[in-house]
Length: 67
Image (cartoon, rainbow, N blue to C red; front, side, top):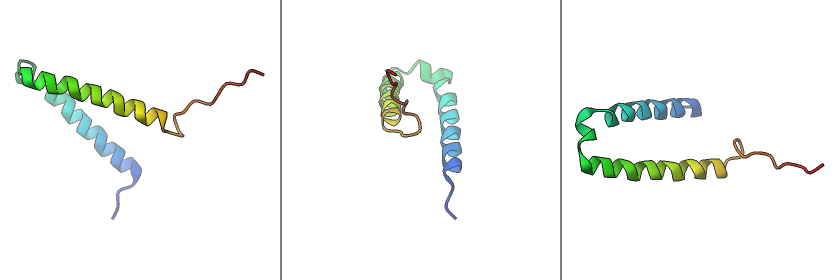
């Protein structure tokens, strides 16, 4: 059976929660290679987020009318 969209979004949020736990672990904070990868990942997330909001019919703000 195929998951519905809300189930997929919920699974993604669970993965994000697991990732947050990973990046908060003390042994990762001292790893310079991990920190560099994390910075690159954060930039990628910003780009993906901007792309999602600029191409979404749900989030796109309505144009303002002058009248």
